[in-house]
Image (tube, one colour):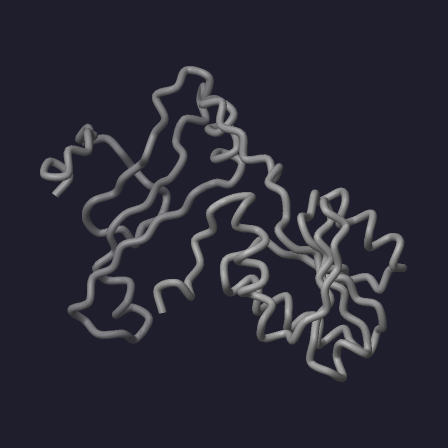
Length: 195
């Protein structure tokens, strides 16, 4: 299968993994980047045909598994010059104006995330001013303000932070509003377009 997929590999008869439940092939994925030094194995694992039945599962069921080291992955990223810094701006920062509206705010947050928007909220009951600073720090394009009046009427107040425009609309119209107003900034891959 590796040959058919054009994935280069090297058969290594002396390769040993430290766990004795491996029964057949063991493998390591090794970086050839010199900067990795002795830490060149990024991911490793193997096949274990007896492990599932050992734990009371069906006899004829084989298994395969692997593990990777988070530190190794970081070393590999650095060696390859790949930067995963979360520099991307947020689409929306949900601001909670009244604590009783917190759960409703979280519902709104979950909904917009489900549509592929990058969104976050304040979880520490901070002041409005502190939340605005957080939105600014995360380079949010919009702030979604949610207080008890929004909760009672099932609405949301959206502030377009770069244009200082503010609109209150029913919560179920929020996603299409964001689609229109954030589309100019970048193309989003939303799930609802395929539905």
